[in-house]
Amino acid sequence: MEIKNVALIGLGAMGVFFAPRMEAHLGKENFCVIAEGRRKERLEREGVTINGINHKFPICTPQEGTEKDLIIIAVKDMGLDQAIEDIRRFVGAHTQILCVMNGVESEERVAKVYGWEHVLYSYMRMSIVMKDGKADFDPYWGKIYFGEANNEQLTERVQAVQRVMEFCDIPYCIQTDMKWGLWFKYMCNVGENLTCALLGIPFGAFGKSEAANQIRWAAMKEVQAVAGAKGIQITDEQMEKQLETILRIPFHNKPSTLQDLEAGRKTEIEMFAGSMVKMGRELGIATPVCWMFLQGIRVLEEKNEGLLEMQK
Image 1 (tube, rainbow, N blue to C red):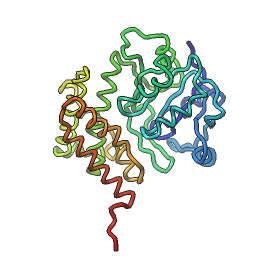
Image 2 (cartoon, rainbow, N blue to C red; image 1 turned 180 degrees about the vertical axis):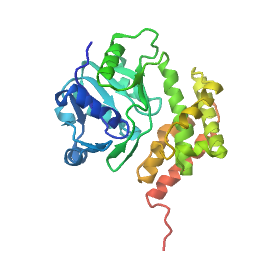
Image 3 (cartoon, helix red, strand yellow; image 1 turned 30 degrees about the horizontal axis):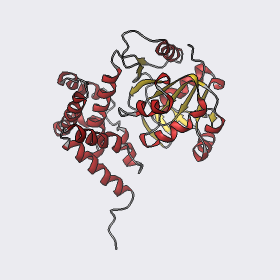
Image 4 (cartoon, rainbow, N blue to C red; image 1 turned 90 degrees about the vertical axis):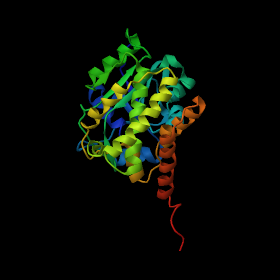
């Protein structure tokens, strides 16, 4: 199996991690961004500015798609159902799909439509702030993680994705236990992302505020309990080491949910806290911190929508 051409859907904070290097190494004829309508027009007119360079990547509409060897889905949770439909013409007999979104359910949603033979587990660990079509970040701070559920021995398709990432100079990691990795990333998002969003603080606050860390830790413990009930064991020691990772993030960087709130956009709160509350209820596990995150950030979304303004 060899990956010669790639399509990317979603050119936000995750998509820009891949697009410049894939276009540069694969060539414009072997790389495209899937978009249509106003988004297509905007990308063709304005492009995106990544580390000071404006890029206008080749655009393909869902209707004119042709089979690709690899498809990377990098959309927000609320856009996944549409993305699954939009890639239909790009999926061939040997196409592999990486859905690098947050959460722990996206692979199952994609595989339900296209089959597990086309889907690998994947997620990203990085911090990119994107605003007004501009992103500035260290392209080597952060990685994509991908693989089968278990990677003690690498399958042919995992090796094929590995080769294209190396060819395109994209940092990657193949974990032995990808389900553990997905849940650990999800736990970090729930604890860090949502604490920052609800309180309006950057990542750097965790290096200064013990109160913020107490909230983060309480949320992580809830995810730990739910993951354990599903057979995913995350230890306190593994959780404690995460603070070291947070402190390496630039102080003023903000997680995606806070960026969305500040920009007046809908957040992925339903995927983060909403899923946690739902899974906790199904398993009989209390999730009061995640419940507060869910309700609190819903209120902030209502505030952004102008629903809480006082009537004169």
